[in-house]
Amino acid sequence: MERHFGYLLKVLFWYHEQSMNRALTQMDLTAAQGRVLAYVSHSETPPCAKDIEEMFHLAHPTVSGLLSRLEKKQFLEYRVDEADRRVKRIHLLPKGRECLAQIQQVIRANDARLIEGFTEEEAEEFDSYIQRAIQNVKEDLDLQLCCAKEDNRP
Image (tube, rainbow, N blue to C red; front, side):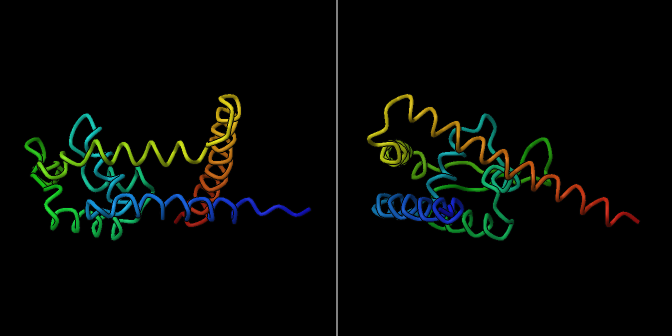
């Protein structure tokens, strides 16, 4: 039997994302916006847009759009970094801080739903398999990027 793991992961992600979107809509947030707010709140120092791009593997225009919408909705704001005035740091506003507990609850509930019916051992194995699959694909991609850079050397 032929397996299509990539397709299955895409379907799983789609359902997970839709569930998150539905749960966060009452706060006027999307799943992606909720994850960004949670990330900003847990960062030791206020992040910049580049940090979010790297954390979530998103393109610059995508992050700019996410942050712009969150700023317009008054969940966060940009402030100039005192140490490096070229950098704009992202800070939560009161509205952003107020919804953090609910965002975390939604994230935990959706993660729990993913492994519902799993034993603790199965959940650990599932986590291990996903981590290994990510590493497999990441290593392959890193190798491809490395080779592409070498092929384009002057």
